[in-house]
Length: 138
Length: 138
DNA sequence: GCAATAAATGCACTTCCGTTGCATAATTAG
DNA sequence: CTAATTATGCAACGGAAGTGCATTTATTGC
Ligand SMILES: [Mn+2]
Ligand SMILES: [Mn+2]
Ligand SMILES: [Zn+2]
Ligand SMILES: [Zn+2]
Image (cartoon, rainbow over all chains, first blue to last red; front, side, top):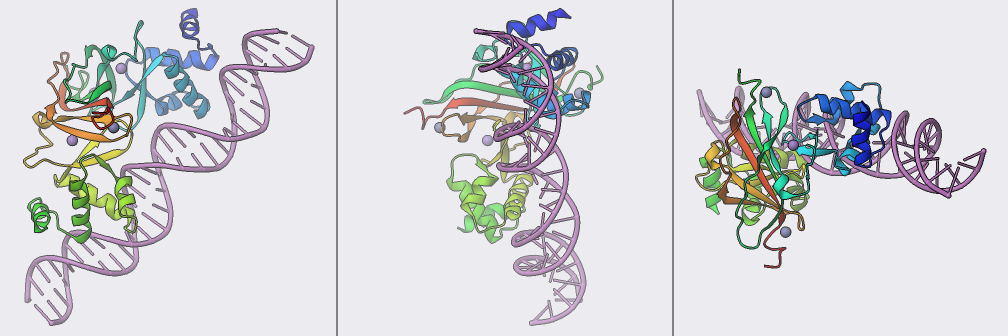
């Protein structure tokens, strides 16, 4: 479990008890996680601490934020070597209309789009919505 | 100006005074509009009426809703013959990080994506963010 | 035209989520 | 050990979406 502490320190995030717990929680879930999810999982902890932990993780590149169109901010651990800032690193996300879960499809990059004259793209977000593999019965 | 009344009636929306005003407002703006925008433009009108007008417009296919990632719901008039439900009608949206405006790029459809086994796509949202033509100095 | 009915509007209030200020506790650096 | 920095706890705020219900306005059947 010293692994996690190493990972956090490498990203200059001090490995406090709470942060390690949250990291572990994120690591064992394979879906995008909201603040409310974490709040529920750690009912005794302070909401603000959880909130700021996520923000710190985001700032330091431990997680990336996901906007899946539900209006609720979600987060997922960055892949090792992930470079969220760079456009070529942008993968798409899938939101299941049935189970309401959102997953990263890290292998599926957002295709390049030719914009009209004068438009300069700096970032992109592509969310597909439908039925996930778990819910589609296969 | 009977044009607008006709358009609304064709979509089974009763053309009340307020609705016609809001329609005109949407028509003369070439960017996506939020409830707050409309609230500002029609300061004397009731927020709820404006809110429900947008919802009615959306339900009846007068406007389509736009999620540009700002967390604020925006709306734009549907193109004549637009079929927002159908996947092939999905166009992308561009949000300017400078002027904070969002526009429909109705000519740019969202490219088809090959999802992993088991995933069934029903809907999609693609937002590009960057500098718009007005702000890019050309 | 008039009463009965349906739809639109106005007002108040709520909920959800994200966010901030500031005091206290814990950790780190000198 | 002390001072400075950082993390946590608690309370409160704010924006935006949404709802319930009374009232006004429009529509329909007669
Ligand atoms: Mn992701
Ligand atoms: Mn659009
Ligand atoms: Zn699912
Ligand atoms: Zn712009």
